[in-house]
Image (cartoon, rainbow, N blue to C red; front, side):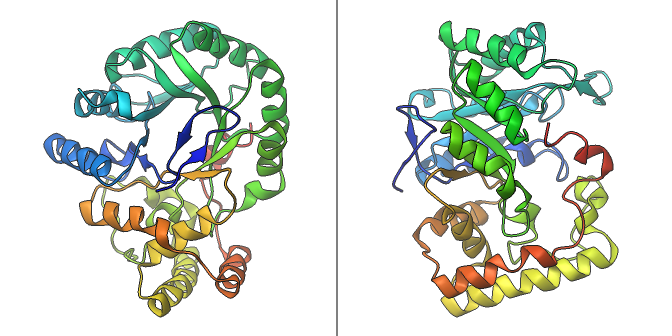
Length: 328
């Protein structure tokens, strides 16, 4: 895969990375550790360099620990991104809130470095904006980590355009991570223009609509521990409508003799060289499919048809509580 520049840095990485959250939580029970490590190693063999995790992923930050164990002896060739901000009670696993304070920033980064078994983090995000802490204060604390060599580049996740601009006045923001897919395009009016203005890459998470655009999702495929059961787009009539729209993506894929997931990822990558994407998976076959999407170049008529789908999607991308934590 050709590489794309991370923001205005001298760092270049392949456009398709791997979102690692689902290996430890949220979409069902944690993946067997030996198999998860096998999948991570296979990703490297397929040319994946960019691995995305967070302090909050998995009980007691199990996802970072997993990556630290998996990447022993391989770290120097990889690009690791992690995040801080949301806090949990690790006795119960319950989420407490969002803490963007300098104190929490420094506590969190030391823990992440330890679990990831590394001396530095390539890209360090504020996972959600803390409404009680000015963004200038948070980014100033994060900038100290860059000066100390603990972090190479800074990012924000699910931040509003004005917040991105304010943050960039304190320190260069190299990436902004937001949900972005054929079905989730709300950031195009505010977030993406701000990214382009400050020279930040957009890291698109959930580019497959949390699996709905993969061509493999069925309305009865959610397990008991799958958080999507509470997602408005996966409920009732909204789910029925959205699956019908996903069928239109699959029709384009059939005409191309490729996978629906590849069409969906190709659409994301076609939005500009500033876009990176981190689809997640717990299956080796899906990993190979996702990486193979790099070779798919969509025709203008296909892009037009896909562009028209978003306005027909039903349901917010998070429940009411989750929606309060974005656009911060």
